[in-house]
Image (cartoon, rainbow, N blue to C red; front, side):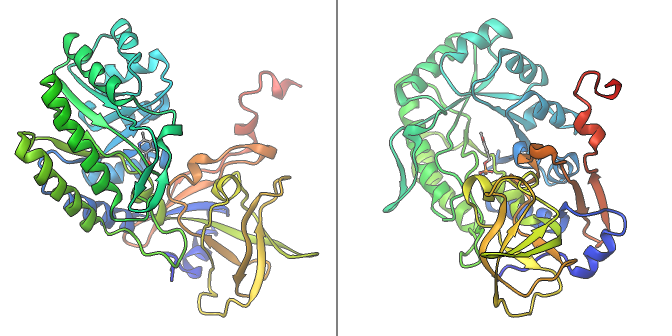
Length: 416
Ligand SMILES: *Cc1c(COP(=O)(O)O)cnc(C)c1O
């Protein structure tokens, strides 16, 4: 069963000063999970997690992860700016972007970030924009489909990211000729995997390729970046990944493939987003309407603009009616927001306890790709974000948008 990390009483205390809707984050959960990850990869001397900023671009969250030893993974100018502002130094910033504007290469390079090239043509761009840095990474795409056992997990052949095997080898040779001295490899082959086999399987593919690269080009990689993709169970029937088993699986592949081939000094990097944050965020929203037509509808004060995943992917997010955790789920509801879009539904035909206007609802697993995917359709405003600290106190870490924010980019709006 999924249990929320906040109680109804806590939410009633918070809403006295911070109105719903808001995303709330559990500092204790974030820290404990980050420590488990660090422990799982502590066998690797150079291990580092670069948190994917796009999942939760909020400085208070980045600072917690920084204290736990993480860096950041950025793919835009503003994500780089935020990382710099939060005090991450160059060695702790990865720039894994695609379709990259050349100005962003220059900015990443200025910060001393590690640039992860998505395409071989970017070598020329980089050379002409800011020069080839000493340390550089390349993104690999094996094509085809990626499967674990008999399960097809994703379709790299249809993905816009990364270079082919041959391009990758050519890229390392070109980069070396242009003065690069330290090389890394990156690949992201499947998203939200709920399986302890994803990283070990990916690691094996990349480790074998690293040996091939060494044999064919003489280049010894110094880091291999397993990127993101370790997922979380959004539905209550699934068991979470066990990061200790995952770390051990990568360790085994490392010892079997890299060590005997003289690559035992390779650092392992990760760029996890969802795994680091998703379970440690809830979207808290209040029931403001009920409607009885062909179905039973519960209208809340949040909408898809605050959490887009159900609307765009049909994603399941578990729902708890706070204070009714132990009541029977014997009513069937659609839980909706107010957008003029029929896909603005947080749940469809969901069995829940009887809901009344004024109830507070916790929508689970919104800590990653939740607030950050928000948008302003229908003139909806982005919510605030709240941090639940380890001692049980709370702090607003981002205020809600106001109409003034919404109108701020319209030239001359207030003079109309
Ligand atoms: C989105 C992304 C990640 C994080 O993915 P998760 O599924 O949240 O772990 C990591 N690296 C890159 C390059 C990404 O685009």
